[in-house]
Length: 80
Length: 349
Image (tube, rainbow over all chains, first blue to last red; front, side):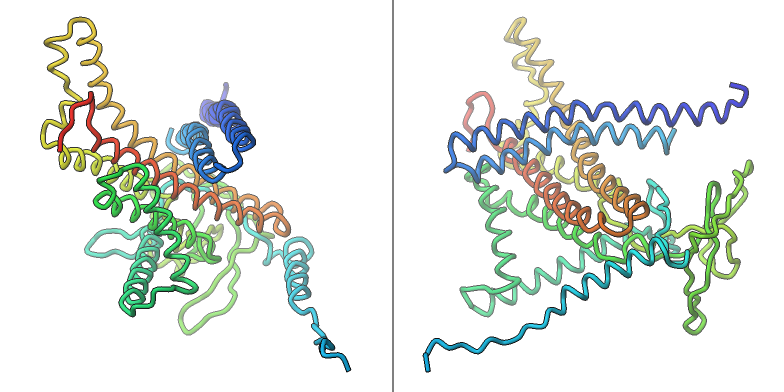
């Protein structure tokens, strides 16, 4: 706290690290999407291609939230 | 003498030794060799850097160059496919086969979502898919993000430049990881280090500013595509319904007639306006985040473990590039098809 510039720089990095905690939710979401997809494929193997397509789509949506967290972390490091 | 006696050709295994030799060369260069060959620490920059070219006073950044390359590749593919169709062969082979598979896959997706409107809707999302797909694949060619010009480091650690060879008046330099030079952070911002003639005043602590950088690592590119996709949903909505399309957002009829539920529906209508802007943000950041994080991962892991891990990461990057292009395409299709479908059971034709 004697050197305000270093203090702020250090807190910036800490903030960016904390912002990435949002990726926890994304990890759970992607896992749930994959679980649902794999179970559906197990029950109905004939429909596997359409289930796989929708599963990948659901995973991309869930992963986008982790990307939002990454965007916030990058904004903290580079633009603030 | 049996008829089935076959001559066994001796196959000399050459390719495996070539690959093993290259891996050994890579390991030597990374760990035991002279420090000139070591992989350099990456420079993480978010905005795209200008290359120094200007057209009519408009600065060309390195992502614009990469987008131009992707554009030229797409136009060549389109011309090739057109001439193939004109020749009249019904059975494509090789490259055109793959192209036909991709187009058929896209068409099935659009037809599944849009039904009657598929013919008109197909063009926009398919073009967006092909552009993002080409841009993401082209980004992985070696030479992207590693060949550039040398610039003085403003703060942090730079490396000393080493002259490799000179062709005519052009000097080809490399930077030597074995000689890091720390640069103190300057208080005043008086340094104009972004000059085009960087080679004349050679820097002491240098970093590489690449000539080419993946297009989707630029927020401008992704947000431009996102804005196009969302604006086209409104355009298709107006095409389907005329101006009453905008009653989706301002449900005045519900406000006047409905009582409490009318008020709630009116508020939901206003919320849809905010949702449109959220769609732009989500399109832009999803594509940008995936591709930028991938490029960052490649350069950092390439600097850390130079031998065994990067090829698998490249595979990952190819996969994710394709997936992100497909997700953008599918979401654009679903939103545009949703705009042409009527609401509240009223049928317009």
